[in-house]
Amino acid sequence: MKPKIFVTRLLPKPAMEKLEEIFEIRVNPHDRVLTKPEIIDGTKWCDILLCLLSDTIDRDIIVCNPNLKGIVNYAVGYNNIDIGTASKLKIPVTNTPGVLTNATADLAWSLIFSVARRTPESDTFMRTGNFTGWSPMLLLGGDITGKTLGIIGAGRIGTAVAKRSIGFNMKVLYNDKNRTIENEIQAEQTSLEDLLKRSDFVSIHVPLLPETRHLISDKELKLMRQSAYLINTSRGPVVDEKALVKALKEKWIAGAGLDVYENEPEMVEGLKDCQNAVLLPHLGSATNETRTNMGLICADNAAAIWEGKRPPQIVNPEIYS
Ligand code: GLV
Ligand code: GLV
Image (cartoon, rainbow, N blue to C red; front, side):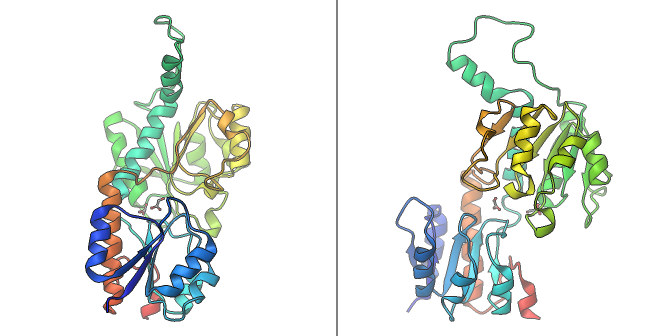
């Protein structure tokens, strides 16, 4: 008999095929996020739970099956899982770091370009028949080349975003308590306050932790330049969305490019009316290649867990000590 894996949403085919080699699979039959009772039902059935960042895996779910062998998250961020409970029960939890670094860094840059050069707005302008001829003051944006890029959180993704700036001859500032990146790219480490004051583009790349929740709120937005842009491809709650709407409406800053929201899939009241915001539906890792690779990594981790080995992308290694 094959071990059982419960997959909370259909994944790209190569990943499903790889899982099928080892596991009996039960997969969410709907094209929607499962409810908590549905996740509990699947978790009770399985040996290993394969879940998404849109599934909240809380204590109730983790304890509902005393024989649960592992939790495999199809994401690099794992703030959706109660790691404390999993660790207490010695349940390994894994994520998908590395494979989505470039896709996410590319998307951060697409937000930089589109918010600074107002491309979504300009596309709508064309499609609605408003273009009557070249005009000196039509849809003016902000320069990118030669400006200052501020990176908050210089992990894999933040560093990859910084490296892409070389072609644009930018000065790079970064804020990270745990790392230095000067061996990889010419950059200046500085305080959050100094970074916010000096950057033309502020791009956020920290995980969501109690200490990063609302890291960017009224005070921080007021420190930014009026001509500056805020880019967030990390987790929504890192930015106080209400404060951001105020900043966008009252023009404390020039604009924002967002891929993540405080209360996904909802947006805070007023955000969609801000013309100076570019809004994407959490697409950081959304390329065919990356989503497939994330699935293959999940399959490797699930297989290792089933074989009783330490999975390669473990996020709670303390369970082995
Ligand atoms: C995406 O947001 C991820 O954490 O993988
Ligand atoms: C995530 O992979 C990060 O370290 O930025």
